[in-house]
Image (cartoon, rainbow, N blue to C red; front, side, top):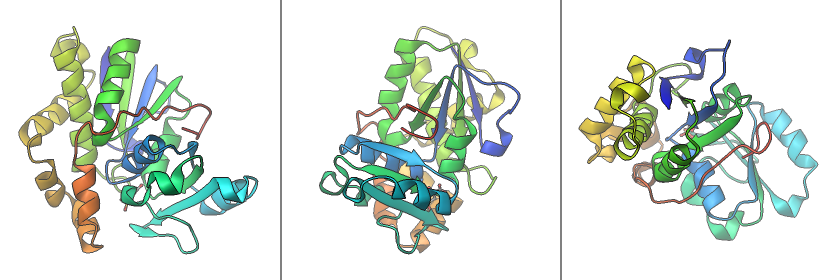
Length: 241
Ligand code: 3SL
């Protein structure tokens, strides 16, 4: 298995596709998606365009849908939910389809939606993703960070490093065998340095600071946990996990 890490959707190659592509938006879209599915949500359907989200979700029975929208870290007016995983309780989401649009995370998923296997990963479901990869053994894996409006993000990179580190530790391949680009080496180094203080790293991260200004410390704490949800968000049809 060869792993390639791309820090943003914009840095992800367009002319080729891997066997398996993984979108990462630890703060907070993929953490929210994993939480919804672990709590019994029927599915998560992603949109970059808010008007399209509203139009498509309109076709769905109102008692079986929730609209989640975030822009600039805040909830979109008129939507049922913002992008806080802590709001996605079983009581609220069980049996419902979540129609979601966020600033960067949904763009990352849409960028890779044509790969044969598409997953969404966060730190909270890292082990479920790693187990799937070790069992499936795809030849090439791309891990695509969402970043923030085209820029590198520490939290997505450390999660990509956590996945690659675990594949290396638990699988049979050497570090050299799994390393597809230099980003993998640097992401593993970042994870090795911070694995025991991921919340501390989030406090250094620009998006972590942005969320702290929005009083989202509890979200940071939740999203900095590793391997707490045994859930594999996998794409069933383009844009639907
Ligand atoms: O950019 C995104 O997709 C969001 O996850 C950002 S936020 O954490 O909801 O602010």
